[in-house]
Amino acid sequence: MPKIVVLGAGINGISTALAIQESIPKCQVIKQRMNLSVCVSSYPDVQFQIFPVTVISDRFSPNTTSDVAAGLIEPYLCDDDVDRIIKWTRTTILRIQEYMAGGHPGAEEQSGYYLSSVKSIPKWLEVMKNVHILSEKEMKEVAKRPEHKFGFFYTTWYLEPTAYIKWETEQFLKNGGQFLQQKINKIDDVSKMGYDVIVNCTGLGSREMVGDKEVYPTRGQVLRVECPRVKHFLIDDEYYALLNENTITLGGTQDRNQWNTTINPILSQKIFEENCRNIPSLRSARILSAHVDLRPTRGTVRLEAEPNGKVIHNYGHGGSGITLHWGCAMECVNLVKKMMLEEKKNSKI
Ligand SMILES: Cc1cc2nc3c(=O)[nH]c(=O)nc-3n(C[C@H](O)[C@H](O)[C@H](O)COP(=O)(O)OP(=O)(O)OC[C@H]3O[C@@H](n4cnc5c(N)ncnc54)[C@H](O)[C@@H]3O)c2cc1C
Ligand SMILES: N[C@H](Cc1ccccc1)C(=O)O
Image 1 (cartoon, rainbow, N blue to C red):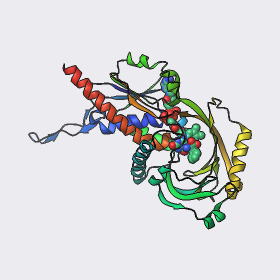
Image 2: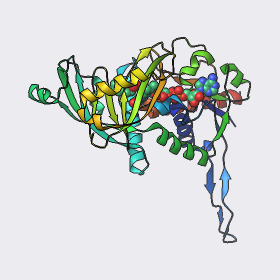
Image 3: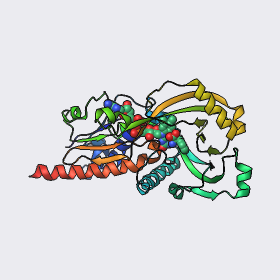
Image 4: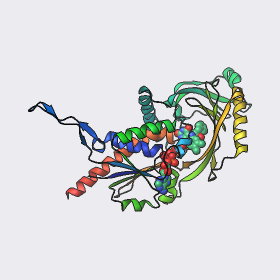
């Protein structure tokens, strides 16, 4: 009976733990009514759970990096292979559409503009809806700055991390999942805890916990404001105003190798002013809060099983952790299944 543990409770940790439960039936509690024809009676609900899944983390939502994210579905600050990114993004979009179909909170389509000083059409645009490259005439109407030379309109989604992780957590617990609050100093400490499969989703924490100096912080500061008049997002080369359920997230900064998580009020003012230049209606916005966190940035997302080991890594999503989460979680499930099969074969010997 392999014991599975997931390290980390951000969007990648919780999603991977839930994906394992949903994809490996023995990893969730199955309630079955045992109807016996002989005495035309039925046993009380019988619960089967063979492989419990545990999540160990030092912090939980709403106190993770994931909770600070604007929730925009769009790859950013992730230099991974673009086809891998697109594959993961597509899987996430399907999951969001299922989540939306369930009427759950914090997810919706959002449409808007990407305005830039350079003419370039990102490959990830192929996963978006209603894509329209702006004509010169349309650019004249939409551009807010002389450097806005090129742009396009499209529809993507937002997925509010805190609301979504809350829902995922409820499903995870319903499936018999368990939580343990603990800081892991070295991943080897977990091996000694008797787990057979360890999935590492600790984001930037992997720098110390696994000793991976390839993962580093990119500091991001944002504002949450209320401004019902604004109906479209607007992203340009430096700033962004992104829709959420009842608020707008204004960003944004991307300072590599900056560890400081103290909010800089001067920066907040600049983020507000620059976004008002792009969307004048924001002048009437009510500023609700400011946030800072550190994007777990890495050349590529580390999503792999350690050879001949029991550890699977899923971290280093940069500015795209919400965008890639379900695609990465499902790829982790395949690695877990493979590892369990290996384990079964070896134990037979
Ligand atoms: C300002 C800002 C805006 C963003 N906007 C977006 C966006 O719009 N769209 C998008 O796709 N992405 C966005 N991102 C990026 C996104 O937030 C991250 O990529 C994502 O949160 C990474 O998720 P994660 O679960 O891997 O890491 P985290 O959310 O950091 O979770 C890591 C977990 O591991 C735990 N942990 C770490 N080390 C240890 C340890 N040693 N022992 C025990 N537990 C440990 C932590 O407590 C935490 O629970 C944004 C990021 C920032 C900073
Ligand atoms: N991905 C988000 C928001 C963003 C979207 C588009 C461009 C830049 C940033 C971030 O990391 O801040």
